[in-house]
Length: 112
Image 1 (cartoon, helix red, strand yellow):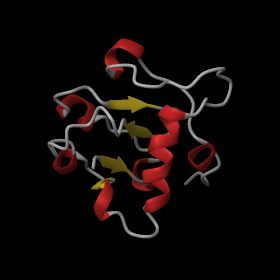
Image 2 (image 1 turned 120 degrees about the vertical axis):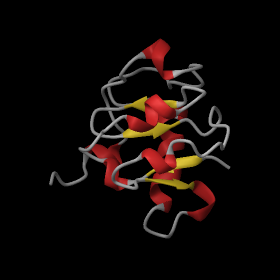
Image 3 (image 1 turned 90 degrees about the vertical axis):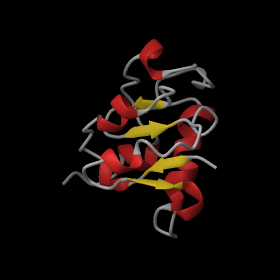
């Protein structure tokens, strides 16, 4: 089971977690960061450095956070808006750079 980034990250992409991740499995959307569930090694290095406490273990997600467990998976497994194919398992965020789009849940999230 991997970690997941919840709504506290929306419009607050500090990126400390990206710098701390030893396997480069945290990707940048437009308004939120996403952890690739298949690339994450469950080390937990990202969780304590998040200044807004947006990162939780997927298995510990409460009912409100559960939609982000599903959403983070969808970010990689389904084609994102404006794209013909899914991201799949790109092998590291540094190689692909910022993705620049989000899943519908995040794109439609009210701006603060």
